[in-house]
Length: 534
Image (cartoon, one colour):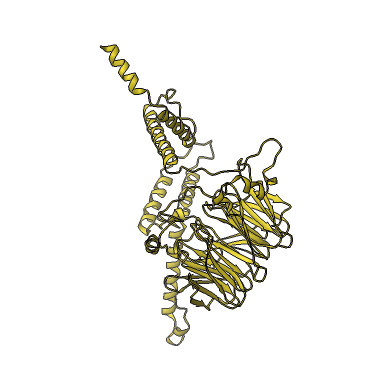
């Protein structure tokens, strides 16, 4: 009977092959999330420490198992990446070679729109990557649905367009035109004319704060709240004209690149820069932030691209021999740099710094104006002097989207609900800071609270009594006289009093005031008006 029970238990423990594969896969993913090897508890003699570490290791195991299950069931897609064999290099692979290997839907993302009469073009994507906004320098604005490649709206403003930016969704967008900035609706209707900013060079939108940030030709930085239209801040940078501007997605801080090689970081509640970094010896031509907000890439006229760690404000890597007019980070950390008729993509696959991953030469004569990765797709948008183009960059986009954050397939009802939620969750401008984790924490006291007069006097009396009770050493004949011992004790008491100078100063000030009052009282009536008043 016992043997039969043991056989039944063994049968229950044996899982089907499919479930065994799932368990093996989960174990592999769990090892990835574990924080190294566990502590050796057997060698510990302290029972309390042993119990604490055991509970800690148990908690780590539970969190790693939960993360592995989330990756298994909620993040089914994995990011692709170009891999080569032998001496072959990834940056030698051309777009025509990639197009032969990908599926039909992916191959549709390779195109070249030629509009030579209205370029060069600036590009912007919505947070979901569903819509793209293109703005030509000669006044052409186009809103495109990237899912089915349909042109939603096309307008000609018949004046210079320097930059374009989406607001919180695809229903509204802003354009920096020749004299003023304008806000348009999805159907091309002009909603607002922003005259307070002057001729704007760059536009950026802070989606968590509903702030439209811009920098004009004379170097003034403006923040405007688009929910009720008021100007939140107008800051004179004092660094002259600039056309390099980017927003850190982690904390909402705006970075400006200047002609002196400095990069300054700003928030709307401060008239002085939060940080001023000397990044290059010459003018800064481009700035870009990693999606996690901890890395910043800058490019200078001296043909160098530098990577900076913003947690320590230190230079991490310098890439020589390449001048970038425009920079852009992808969701997976790839860095695209464009200049002239050439686009280069740098990858950090090994963790040893960014190195050459892919390159794409444009048609001769095309001058790259703007590069930008499309969210949730392995696509790089390129705005140039003859229109705009799109190329495939494997491994650049996040393969799994969160429908609560950005949903490329959202309906009009979901969009309206999300807009209401965004407005309810809107953050005030005061929350923009270098370290947003400090929000909600206790502010440390700037200075110690001064003790009261009674506490100081009590401490002084204790110190004097301690000085009086000091036992004097017995010294040789002639050096142990009572007069010398008394003199020594007086010195100890005086030294103890000197440790409380505030009380002494107050006493001296009080004495001087009383002396002055007595002297004024003794003066004749005719001279009292000349007496000093305390």
